[in-house]
Length: 293
Length: 236
Image 1 (cartoon, each protein chain N blue to C red):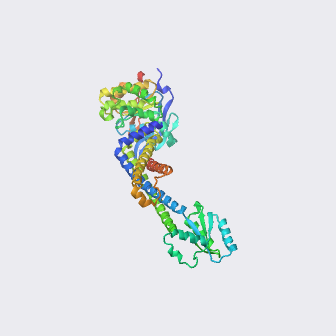
Image 2: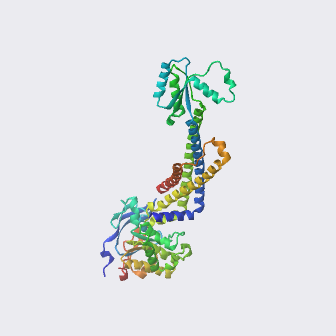
Image 3: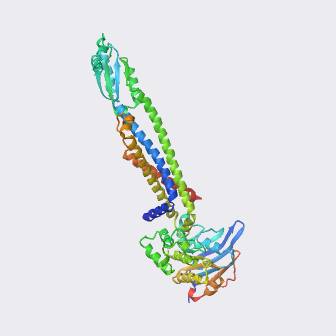
């Protein structure tokens, strides 16, 4: 029976080529916009992850600190669940590092009468805890210790960037939902037009004993096929976008050393499934309305 | 000879009324139609013949009264069971009601597809029915390319292909010349001779006289009590 339904669905699509083409085109454009946005989100996410992986938290200690106080701070750091690893950097070692970084401009530090740098702990965080809010909470708890002068984790802008990214992501999801709703509406409209153009045929089918399921099944399949083709074309167009932005000069300009990648297979499957679901849903809404009336 | 009325009724109508707003299409019709009967429903235009047929396959529902088809009470039938009821009937319409975008073959095969016949069995069955009505050579044609008589033959083929218990024919020869009308009537007789029940709504007195089957007359929705019922051996 399913083969018969699929054959009828394909025949209907052929008979209503113009409507089907319009529907597929609208779905394609919707999917192109959604998948291009997803491409942007995935790659910006990668970029932020790469920035975060290099993140170090510096805990600067008060001067003239006793060993016992230093050990208390060390104990607190050891107990913090966010910390993957840490090391103590004495002020002398810090100066050496500083000097090595200023190689060629050694005169800048040569005239120093005393080492201005404090003792410090350098912390590396567990990736799951590299969220800006959690880093800030850790920094606050360490700063509260009387032996800690300050906590620096550089790249504070990362938090602000992350907040903007979150807003953009939410806007993206909302836009995706709106576009999918547009696809649902368009497929629903196509189904309605197809049914109106075939109202006599539907009447005859009912008179010869066809069930509503027999009449509806090919239309559902048409909706899903239109969703699948529209989704496929939209994703193919998105591949072209990807090829453009991953081309040499653009890659270095936008990605800051991160290799731009296309959407992962699970995202592609999700977008195609969403597109087919939109086709099915559009058909369902339309049929429910028409068959009820 | 065994009269059809000796057989159990397949259709029963009890005090059936059908109104359209204030318009009375059928008034207090009580009627039995028997298995393997050939029945004419006669009367002038607007008498309620077509309405009576439509009530049987739930093309319309009664305003008052009860209709039973093969034991099914149509007042109590659920929406889901209506297709099952309609599969008991093969319906021939005056305006043929063929799907113009489907070929002759597809129009006839549609019935078998709709009732869930295995697709391997469909071609053989459709070909044999088209051969019976003399339309096998036109299987690939589309209805608009056929004459009225040919279209009605296809409509008869579609009506009988699902092996229904009952054929309902609403003015089946109304728009045909006499030769084509004879062919259609012969096809209905063939179905009847194979054990089927046939109900024909017509005002074609020549056709009725020619056959001599039982006739019921309707006039402005009322069943006439003095229905002139006569029998032709070939129809019982």
